[in-house]
Image 1 (cartoon, rainbow, N blue to C red):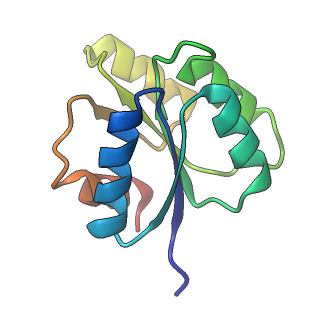
Image 2 (spheres, rainbow, N blue to C red):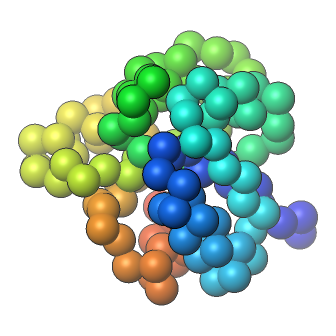
Length: 124
C-alpha cells in the first residue's frame, strides 16, 4: 500500500515542524507543509494528497476561507480536511462540523497521539 501524503497548513513554522515530525515518525506518512493559506492552496492544487490539516486562524487567508476555496475547486474538493483550532467551544465545533470537515483537533494537542487522532478521523 502506498504511503499517505498529508499537507499541513499553519502559519507557525515551529508548529509545522512538530506536526510534520509526529505524522512522519509516528504515522509513517509523507508530510508537506505550507506556512500560508495561499501557499497551501497552490500545493493542494498541484500535489496528490490524501488529507489536509488546516489551521483555522492564519493572517493572509484564514482556514475557513481556504476550506471554502478547496471545496469549490474540483481538483481539491475530495481531499478530506481536518481543522486545527484553539477555539474549542462547542458552538465553534458544531459550526465546523456543519462545514463537512473530516474532524477538528484542538490546540494545544498531544504530539504522541496526533497521528492516531488523524488516522481515526480519516478512517485509516
